[in-house]
Image (cartoon, rainbow, N blue to C red; front, top):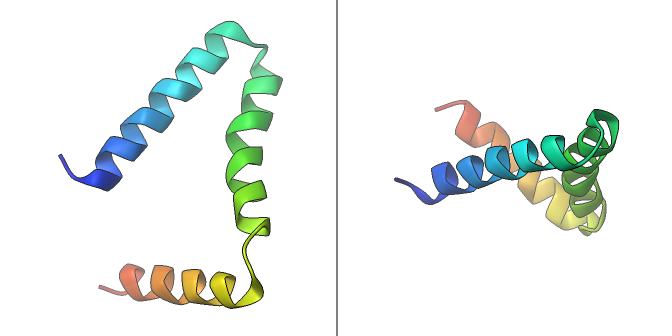
Length: 60
């Protein structure tokens, strides 16, 4: 299993656990808010590099 697949499986498991323990709106807020907050903490140069790499991989 690749590293990205392990991360995806962990994210799904964490999301399911949050849905069980918290109301659905709180779990949704956490699942969407954490990646958004991480993206906003990047420098503008890091954001540009991330967008460029993502687009390049999508074009494969």
